Image 1 (cartoon, rainbow, N blue to C red):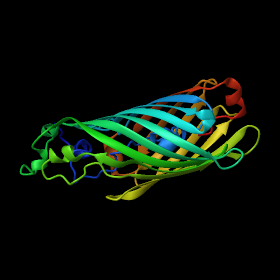
Image 2 (image 1 turned 180 degrees about the vertical axis):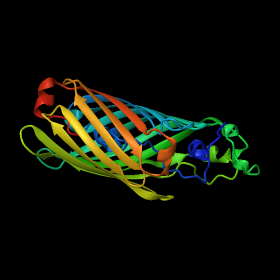
Image 3 (image 1 turned 90 degrees about the vertical axis):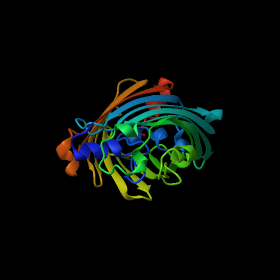
Image 4 (image 1 turned 45 degrees about the vertical axis):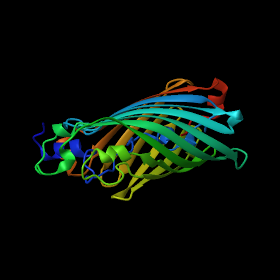
Length: 310
């Protein structure tokens, strides 16, 4: 199947319990505009319903490289006291595929004139497939690679906390705090007790008003997984006339990111991000591309009075 070691590493990323598991959870660069994909407490944080479509092609040019498709929908309930959301994701890495559907619920507490603290829960089901027999490997005695996994159903549960006001936000989440993957690991000889592991996300951002035309938004995302070193995303975005975002970011140990977002109308917004690796992996791929389309189903006066900063 593969002829290059880096290709095999990409293909095996999710298929071997002993390999790096840093990408079991979704990896996106435009997270600061799509908090629902990271934190269930983000649901209902705007006074209108919204939906996002996102596609990410990672490590373009490498066989077996990750490809991700996402759909997220959320809306407020009970005059903003609660929020609900739904996410759908399809993640493909090498010979493995993970399709997940999940619902989110958030309970929001007012902490100030324009600030809220939300507690969120996530419950969903993941259909996991891994054609391990398609891998090219050297250890022919390793039983982990002897069989395939077809549409294994895994129940997943997550939790998050999210605070925000008009210009700032702070969130902490564990998208998969528990996964009912006992049958999945039972089907993988030599696998650990749990295949899906807990990932912790801490993110924050603030919008600084420079003048009547420009706003500046620094934001940070810290990702931690017990079996891997912590990873930090540092980003800086400049907003021009509340319509056009231009940003740049740095991901520790991995690469740099450039991104743009345009508020096409009070209903539609579109974004694009390009990641370039700074590690040795840059010699084997053409970077990563991410495109996004957002629909905000709010009334136009709301959008004019309170532009979408995050």
